[in-house]
Length: 195
Image (cartoon, rainbow, N blue to C red; front, side):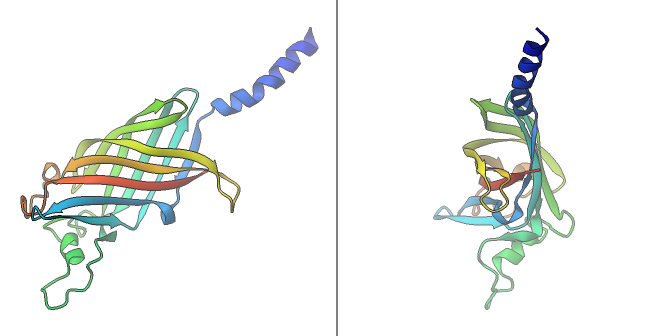
């Protein structure tokens, strides 16, 4: 009887380990929050942020998780850094008080309040985006969330794409509306290694 109990306990160990929360750190070289916004009703302009840090936790058995992400606002780029004959380039203007005001607000953050699961993997995350000192609810839906092994360091690695929408006026960023659209479509491409 005692041998049977020991065998059952040993057999349960892998399941107990699998049920534990898993912590991941974002790979800043493969994580790019980007956005699109309508421009003069003619085209859709694209921008991104090149410096992002963060962590997330997923517990597949309990179907819970957490997400925290910090984005350096001065890292915004739209591919327009050369002012030419203009007073300033677009990227320079985006860093000024009219838009991201990076001198006063060098970071924006997202912190989850709930992670929703579809099967064994997250399907969406609800939380608060803080930009220009203002926090507003934001839901990000995962268009893709996959896990595998990093071929270089052999660690477990997860990545994907999360999408959502915000109105910049909700954060006090009202310059040039409606010539430059109010709604920003967000797409966060990310990869993270297990700690």
